[in-house]
Image (cartoon, rainbow, N blue to C red; front, side, top):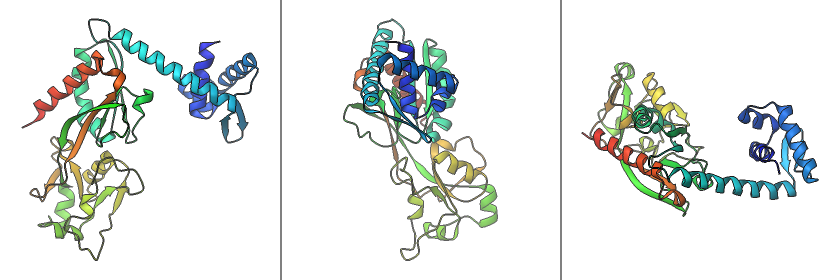
Amino acid sequence: MDWDRLRIFHNVADAGSFTHAGATLNLSQSAVSRQISALEDSMSVKLFHRHARGLILTEQGEMLHQTVKNVFHELALVETRLSDTRDHPSGPLKVTTTVSFGSTWLTPRIKEFVELYPEVDFSLILSDTELDLSMRKADIGIRMTPPRQPDLIQRNLLALSTHIYGSRQYLDANSVPQSAEDLDGHKLVVYGDDLPLPAPSVNWLLDVGANPDAARRPVLRVNNIYGIYRAVRSGLGLAALPDYMIPDDVNLVKVLPELDGPEIQAYFVYPEELRHSKRVAVFRDFLLQKIAESKP
């Protein structure tokens, strides 16, 4: 059986179309289609139902997809174990975390890590959607909520404090609130309520000191914390933000500094099968060192 065709089939099944799979594989739509047709001919079965709106796996296609997925998963594990038998950490290391934490805290520190471990092929995936670590969509997750999957190892990484911030431009034009109750008269930027929250109690700004008979209406809802930060920085309104985003931003001012928001606990998460991975261990130790250095 042709491994290249199986790899292409795996990508097509995940993507649901020849075009999207081709974009991932750097192949044309017609080249992908030809490879799938050749695979179907070699196996004498139809693997996909072709529809105008995309592709749907046949029963036989579902069976093959599950088998191929398991095989590639096992191959990834073998690659990890082979790489970790060497003296120095080497090979791929894929880390995922939220857009805000990855963009503002983690990314500026990655340069030092890749210089320390040049044989590690480091990839960073920023997404507020949790990737499936058990299926090796990533090797490590830095998450703001405890993992729900039982086969993942977790350790508390750090506690992130939150406060209310506004731009100097906004505060000059709208006055500085003197109490939590004063927030009723201000424009507030919050996380979208139709999406999974990236951390518990992320929208506490809507409730603290609020009149129970008159719910606060935000001026804007945004689907990630970094977007909220950019909106506040532009002068749109006030928002509750993690303190780690702010240290170097002289344009933002902490409002009601005595009012502490709920702490966000960050977790370092990885699959059980990577328990003895040198790459995971050196990255964990690197993060703990950077966290210790960043504490006042």
